Image (cartoon, rainbow, N blue to C red):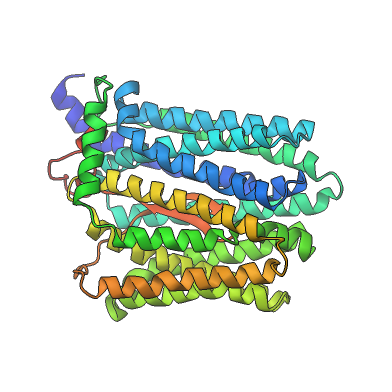
Length: 457
């Protein structure tokens, strides 16, 4: 096909790729709902204690966050963003196969389970920036708010259905819970493999040549992002992550062991958080315009800090329901306001590297917080309630320090439209999302488009 003919077909190729992407996102959400969201419960069923849970819930996240820093190098090595995204999806498929083997053999080996989870998160972290750059280029041909609203809605519906069905299945499994996990991991394996096939079926409108894989592309850009970026909000998010992870690994064993909740109740509570977050996030733009971004961040921080207080004060079902609803809404508002501030703090042209550094710093704080919490838990006078209250204090204190720091900072006068993608689901931060950076905020190393986008179709 000659170049003019290819140019005429670009909008059609983009439309087809974006429709396939909606299916791919739904398949990914099914994998998250039936497997990834229950990894903590799976570890509890295998008999792992608080210290092991702390390692299992944080070290893989840190590895995945750190791997994002290598995405430009991976794009150069693989010769394109699409290849990196497909390789990441296949890597997660292999990790799900390992989890299926662990469930089938009821293995209690910590190194084996940790290796499977690290492989899962590293694969996801490595593909995230490449997928982001790919999607940013594809969506210059369409109306972004309408498209991402449709994609996000279908993703959350698929997530809620998959998560609910998995909880119902685990509830009905009785004593054969690990056998049920085999089935769930098998479903997740098929869903992720199908999503990898969907990624392969999508066109990359700007495929890259095979670039020379060397550190000359990667490290100077990271250095520039580190030197030119502003990191006060990043420091706040890292401190918040530390305070959150003091108690986060204990939420699942607390619900399943201490409170004796059935999987049906566990799934219902988490589903409330997912729904509250999904409904709140789209309204955060209007709330920020009316009340101001600092005010939204302030109240979101207060809400996040109040969640473990409710857990510590009462184990009544109505209180737990309130905690999950507040948690979903508060995390949605906090993610939205922090995304806006991070986009303002990111140096021009180095947004991907800046967000990767932010994720890496947050990951290190998560590991530190979880290990500290696991060490404290079980000490004389320190049980679940005491650790929840400590977590509330450590979540609230950074918010006070942040506002003293932000008083002298330039805040964005015009809020950007944010388009988020679903990454994972956790009992504490519910459905975890990350912003999709537009092409102008992505580096050339990921194959960004620098020309003006064509009119929306």
